[in-house]
Length: 306
Image (cartoon, rainbow, N blue to C red; front, side):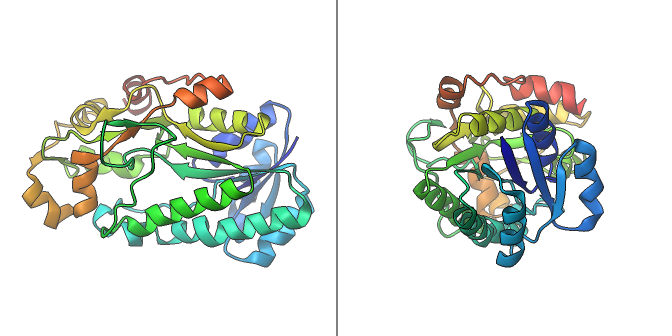
């Protein structure tokens, strides 16, 4: 199968491209600048420079590749985590999830691409009512009135437009593995990432390699619909954060009351730590036959972050 990976040099793209090639697929992968062309070629894929926010650039790249499937992995998440100004932190990624998705879908229609797979998100953003663990049937929380609202609306947009064309929406949990959470580990080591309130809010995690393997299966199954790509153990912050600190050799995180965390870290951080909802992977395991090699973040943190 010919697979076009938009965003082939991101932390997930660098795991996905080799896995696709190892399974016998012909891969064209994109990068936003020429500096990473050799990175893609060394992985064994055809490399192309593409501006995901430029319709002509996207159209030309897809037309030249003539893929059977497009996999949308374009993001632009970098720098220091900024939960208080989430909208600024994710500003370019939000555009890639809206404008970039539109450009890829238009190119897919113009060239007759039969299948489309897009990245979504499912870590702590399940609807904040009912139980702590959500399925694909449960709505995502838009976090109205917070700095995360624009990002949550961009995620909803991706899911809506990709669903309309019968594509697959992969809701990845909080990605970890080499290069994925360096920006989190640093503050944890410096005790600058505190536990807020009771820390009862849940998150779901997934190792990069497992996220990539699930994506390969979505491509090969020509999947349609929404799938949670998370490990087997959604967990509250009061469990995963102290364990992460232990794995990186840091002291236990400080505890900060909600009333103080809200002006310092913002409403989003408070909700993640105290009200977040995690996700179930039962549908993905059932329909793809997927079995994560890191079934728990406990094993993954210990092996990857020690």
